[in-house]
Length: 161
Image (cartoon, rainbow, N blue to C red):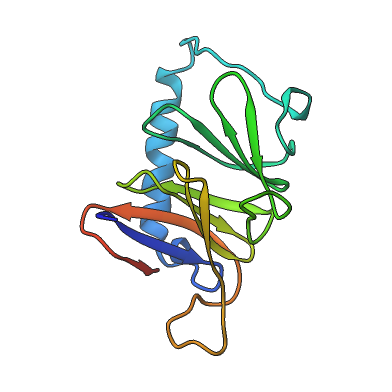
């Protein structure tokens, strides 16, 4: 992977230490909102009746290939515009948790999946999944708790915020 990935844990509330960032973001959102009020955007509602694994959507990612990745409280869903493929703790390959909290696509096309039980990385071409979770026995392990956000940069490697 060439991009750098930052992982934000619930124990490290980055935004609580950045009040100026929050204020500036809200200000820009409020200014931008009226300019889009009259614009009509195409919208399709997808639910469990259409094949979505769970109606409680936590995060959405559109990959470079146009595929939509939808993280829910019932697992990860791949949507190609016509049909869903579901990944869960019961699927092959299996996720470490059904509660998906964050999604990121890296430069190699792998999907980084933040869960309430750690981090999974899916190679959608080979359909393989690697799981990373907290381990008291390892000095190079994730902190315990959920992965709340994933952020990539152009520099390479990854670290936590």
